[in-house]
Length: 543
Ligand code: TRP
Image (cartoon, rainbow, N blue to C red):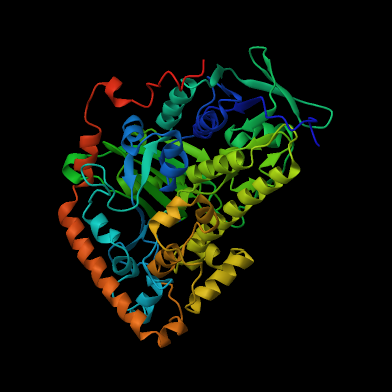
């Protein structure tokens, strides 16, 4: 037994920080444990929230919003939501002078397979990489994305797996209203001092207004500051700048004529001289930011290249300058304090893992939620899950920089020559080159997105590896040997390729444009009708 000598339930949880991580955690815990546990969140009225236009992954609906009971259309309306069915990687391949931009899509969803062998292997077996590009041959999406089709039919029925873009402030605000309506107590105040007990656990937090607040369990959602986990508890943060060089960003919101130009249903990641620029289409504007390595470009230079990309005038644009720390805490949960969000770990946003890390951590926290005994097994297990999730994503993002053949600046050369790859990533690359499957086969989108356990451990599927590797022109050295013995399966794969073509054509004709869908969804209606989730039933209300 560690802190309190009892297997009795936690009585109260204190969440520090009212950004996206804080309010997502508060809402989830209220739903999961609110009938027994008192949940309080302290939010500083002064500290700025980091949240910018944010991109997510498809599991957000199942892990978070389905759990809360809020349908997609409903929360999208509240948060300026738009769709993200893929990431479009622009100019990640070497470009000859005067050549047009090159690009490929990294689409969501699990590849079709034949008897457990993902279609990717048949694609390479058939074409040796010299025929139709991987994405267009194996996924329905790329053709539809080029045509700016909506990932949903007009009635909301999904046509392809999709994630979302949204304004993170609005998500925090929406969940704040949802959670406080369900009994979460919100305190507007600021933590000034954290008091430890004799065993080094957190005893109380003291605020600017003179309050002393204590709880059985503390959740640190204080962003990069890590006020409790790093500050008070002194847990070391593992910096990983030698594994991913980018450490800064300059960002802005840029007006956009949706009606004339349409809305892109994807995030773009445009490679630049010392990093890359995101483009996140929202309504009437897009969010964009140049993520760069300060060792390779100073702020003025980054600003200049960013302005040049979009034709911005430096003088009349509002810029957001961001510094970030790449890495994770040695342990995400220490004693009676778990960290969630930026206070726990951060990876540059190339594969939109930020919100995923938050929802995954909340899910794991609920799964390993302790009693007052704080069983060390639960803590260790939670920490192992977070560590695995983070390191696996870091490896995958790192591989983008390692695999690209760009060599036109000191930044890209350093990525080629100086990166330290993990052993497991080296092994995956070797398997890929040998034509072998890099991951266990998954049978369908439904199985995949339906089972969180399966998904956390296999977040990057064979389709994800092929999208990036083949998309960048990095091909296996030979086809999967086994296919030499499987003429019937090869034939079945050919049938699947033809199916994909047909579906592309049919969906392209049937789906509305993303602009049509979103302008319909976000059309003016009175706000009472817009937020049924906030109108809670008597039964749901706690006090
Ligand atoms: N397995 C994840 C998913 O499909 C992979 C993923 C994360 C991904 N971020 C992505 C796929 C961005 C495409 C684009 O949800």
